[in-house]
Length: 142
Image (tube, rainbow, N blue to C red; front, top):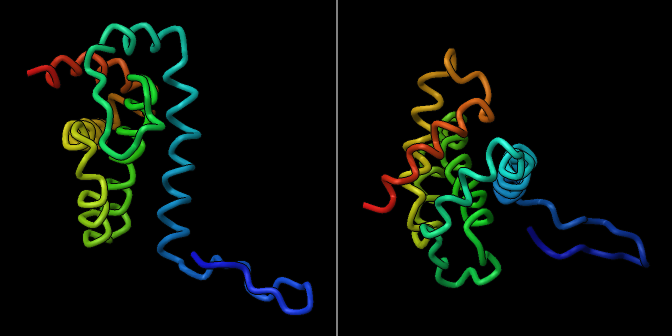
């Protein structure tokens, strides 16, 4: 994405001329609209809180200061990787993995999403899968 271009006070280019950057940002932020509301639900939040000892700061990402936020971000970022693959963009998927290399739990979350995708008859929504994912969190402590 670039800067807006103004000619005589009129926007001639909004700066959104990088289709890949707009797609990546849209997928990321849209992912939060699915995940963030779920992790505060009374049926989910206590399970996350029980694993707050798993929180580790992400180098260079000081804005993420707690386990729930880190959990959400890991899951959304893993979703970005999986969506790129589903769109037939394996090179973008790999670029995202590289860009997110400091997100230490990303491989775990990606594997969890693969389990979710492979069992959609059992888990029709991400909400129905979250308890299963939370039960798997102790794997991260090993």
